Image (cartoon, rainbow, N blue to C red; front, side, top):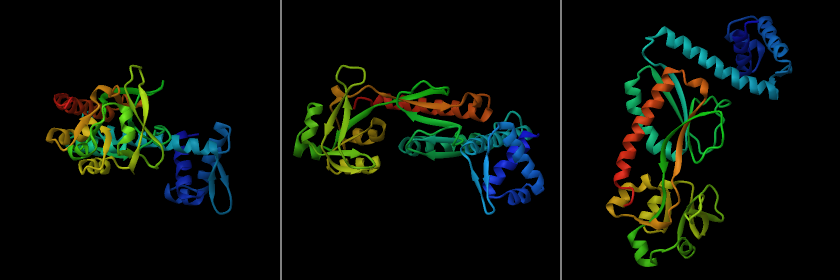
Length: 306
């Protein structure tokens, strides 16, 4: 059995919805496609497809194979394309996932220069505020915030993110400035969440992880940009990454609060599968991202305690 050809037939059958449609698009015969998929099922010792007169349905094992096979076939195509081009010029497509705020405000602007440097590379930037399954979702690289559990993935630390609280001078003139995290219970706090409810912000208390303090959330949004705009207008106290409000702090539109109680910085990592390390396009992108982030950090250090 030609496993690559069999996997291609299997993937095409799933995507077209029938064996006959897969045979027409390959092109191949219906008999050949049917035999290839049967050979895969015999090879793996499990049923991959449930076949009815009208449609195909994936079994649980079939779904696993479909995701893996699609990724493998994609990599084979990229290898073929790379070998057909200048071997010294990285090429192919990169699929990168990132938390939406970091991706939109930091990573997306970096991509312009990267694409200019490497005209044979394309980038898919997926803004996803959840942990992705890099294998099943065919993600080459993922940016993740927070401390990582033990993983088989390769990690590269990009930076540390400092969460701060701040408010407009107008709000502080009306309501006073909180001196301790406990004081936030008596203030109008602007909470970031997909669903309103009880909220707590973490502050340093001498322990390694810090302590969560309940806040009084009068305004809830699932957009940090909108919350920062509301804070500028005097609506209350907001908690955001320091880099997001650097210009507001420098101009005086917002004031940084509770500096002595700020929690330890949260690491930001770039993650990839070990098998991707040999890919020239991945190495080029990782090196570029680290280079660009270093420039941003040098700038941030100048105003870290404003």
